[in-house]
Figure (cartoon, rainbow, N blue to C red):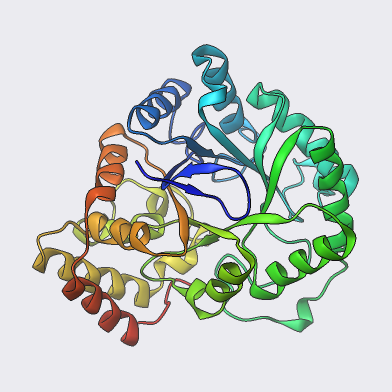
Length: 346
């Protein structure tokens, strides 16, 4: 599998990344180990997790994903074979994470990295990411910025300085952001250059056929600043696989978890987009999954696409889609649908 340089770092990451947020909820520890073994067999060297995983987030399971990865690392001895990424949670109502006082300040960053290292059974993280910003910014389905939601936030310079200390200590190699905006990326770069602090090398944002918002300005910012996109939810929580079109009660996050967890993927326009992309795929001898993933795999600005699965056969199909090349005809068809149903899953 092709490996890409991640932004301005020295990290060479596989074009497909194994996402792990099902480990500990939909997948057992044994399942997790099987997926990790299989991913490495297929040439994947990039593993992404987070301190808040698995989803849905809850006190009883928080941190289990990292623990399952850690037990695999201990058993397999493969730490040097992988690029390991994890994330610190930003401000939230999850009061089980540092008593609900979580934010991107030095105290929280220090506590978060220490517990992640313990759970992962390693002494360093290759890519440490800010799961979402400290400041008010539209994320997770919010479609526009609302100044009335302004709140006190940790200054970006302060966050970068704390991360810089961890780089000096050897606990993290590189840093990245997630669920960020164009302003946020530019400000992180500005503050790192102004104060000689670590520079972000990646941004992990939602990107799929029903949400191409990255293309509206972040693509240029990241190109000019050499920041790699890690595309998450490439199948839109399973909507773009077509399984919910075939059976609205199909097993998956959209049926297992309350609608309030992922309302953007239940919007009528997202369902309609899924129908039209599935029809386009069928017309061209592809499965909906192949179309959706091949689209992400082929975009010039995607450094790695984060895929997740609950079964090994799903994981195999997702990885196999890397070998699919979309014709100019199919790409034109995607763009025709997108012109009418523009980013309904934003």
